[in-house]
Length: 300
Length: 230
Image 1 (cartoon, chains in turn orange, red):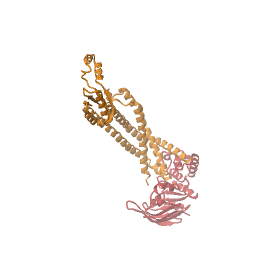
Image 2: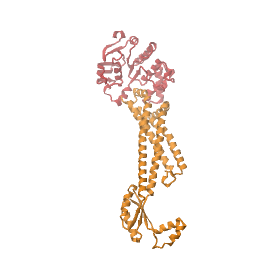
Image 3: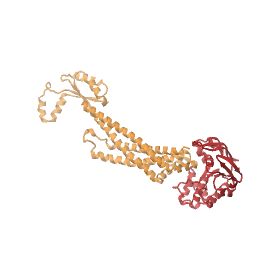
Image 4: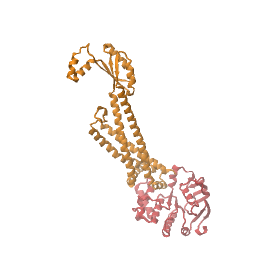
């Protein structure tokens, strides 16, 4: 009963003092709000870049053209040999007839030419399209495929793809680094703001100590207060995140450069996870900030 | 029976200043003791050691069975619960009403609301501020504020009341009013130890007087007067 009463009191006191020290609470809250907005933007950026990288990666494949006079058995043999290599996710066969059909459909003028080909005179080649597991190793894998018999050429858009992968990798790393740095800076900044807020309540802590409040009993209300401030501070960033991102997504039609390369992350469930993350960051940072600030005044 | 027993206490500050040395003092239950001395004589250090704001370098300070000199930081609250402290500068919380300021000291113990309310009103009555319970500290006169502090200090029925120049900021008449309240509390059985510069108070009260000079207790009178000291 006594325990429940004290828990009840901790929450009541913490809630009251958020409003009693409103100007200072407001300072801490706005500090959290502003930094969490920046964190939210970084989360949106980094997650989208990651998504784009994944999208691009999944569309990259190695195209292997076989020699023009390969037999059915040799075609199978090539497939078996490729599958024996590491880093192969998927392999699909596309015959020269398939290519002929595709070409025919492109333009009626081509149809005349394609129709004139017979089984023997067809100038196209059979091929395999290979999807790799790790896109970073695509060059190495292509090199190994090249060494297999009955292969005419191996193609994966070397330079273009390599530069895309490198750029996305760098952007992704910068974004993640940015988010982590921002979270750290936020924690530090908020800890300092709360420290200032609590500094003005030194007397309160001093009196609490004088009348015989245990260190625990002093710390807990401040920590709860810090988490209230953190939660309140994360409301605006969360609202901005939910409405802002959904609106942006709808406005852009889900694509960034109106190409399949710049596909954006669909708002749901992305905004839910991100909002949860923002709330947790706000809460932890508020708690941690208060804890550190109070501890300073508890040393005797 | 001894409530406070100070033996061979010495305190040197980090700056090298020797604040107290060779201090031995015994105070019995129910006594009223004045500690007097010039500014910088060490009386504030002695008082601060009693509620463990300062720690002695050597010696022991026993208060009601607790060795304050060896008390760990995180256990200090156990000592503080047994005593009340009154300061010259009041240390009231300006955003709390008189009632809330006094109740603050009881809430630490998690008493139920009814009990807190009854006891707070009881002590406010004792210090003569029953009708000011809903007022904020800055709406009160200095003497009234000090009465609130006294009410807060005694609300938990401490065995010992420590007063560090409680009348330092008050005019003579108001000071005598405060002394009357303290005397009443003392008569109810609470031991009081008080530092002061006010010779009129010491002379009027005719209580035990301990004189500190340059970090050492130099005189200890049973029913002292200020002029005998200086």
